[in-house]
Image 1: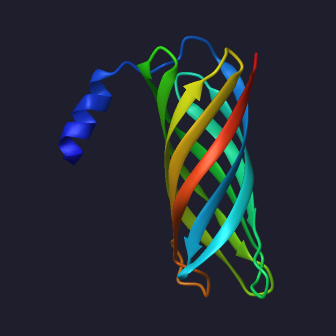
Image 2: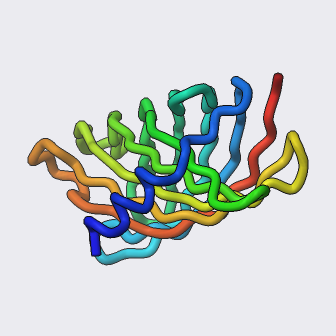
Length: 153
């Protein structure tokens, strides 16, 4: 299955018709340590031959420590149809749990975006993050997300 998906992605030409900046706001319920937490975040992404950017998101839940993820992101984008694209992003950054610990994390964020116009897109995606260092933070977090993006030229 994984090989078939890799061959499909390699057969689709990467979409980079013109270079642009994109800013996205997203929200996601994410599972951390068996608890569902709401997360909100922002991402700035440069869309050229590769996707390069940064993002920051924040999670809070009554009775638990607030958490912040700050990361650099990079990846590729593939056109699936005229107004539909698949973005495959990897990320690396710092997971901060206020008052307790910090840890380096790695993550993956595949998403499908629907282009509503030349400047606006809506998307759905998945997110998985793994804390690399054995700190006293949640080692694995995962969830889905909804995001809205605006492009600037």
